[in-house]
Image (cartoon, rainbow, N blue to C red):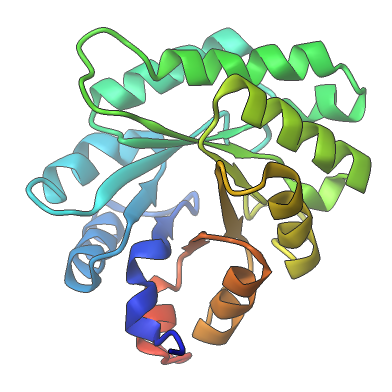
Length: 228
């Protein structure tokens, strides 16, 4: 049976990451997420406490970003940011890899960077599993680099590979999503992000191998209304 727009809701991270987002914008996004029962709301770290309060007693998770959007902070900073976000109520973290290390092929540095965040999710007093997504920013990478990042992320225990930050020159492509899925198999998730604004675009990403979609146009995706 063909998937319908409303069936996609639990695969959507309803996202509000633009730098001028206000408290009212975040409230609106959280209200929409509860109405449509999205997987999560993805907010900048400063909004995690607010989102946690607004989404309390709902099935919608609080997601935030780490080392965003450049991935250029130190691993220690990313680990602290992760712990702080979790204590503030985050249940999922999307971390940006050290892209400079990736392009330098300093794979030990990359591995320790991702591992620092994965390890930071296992903090004292947290009884629920925290989902870690590794943003690899595919627009800057060649096929060999994508494959290496898939291997490293899977090896250190990440839960998802995410294609993009939304701040690069372009977002996800179906070819890159397919490549990631081919390399990680079915053991971890693939999140497509960047430039996915309609149901048809989201469906193309799912067909390519994604099982999570990030978009600021979550409502349009699940209602099939491109003008939402």
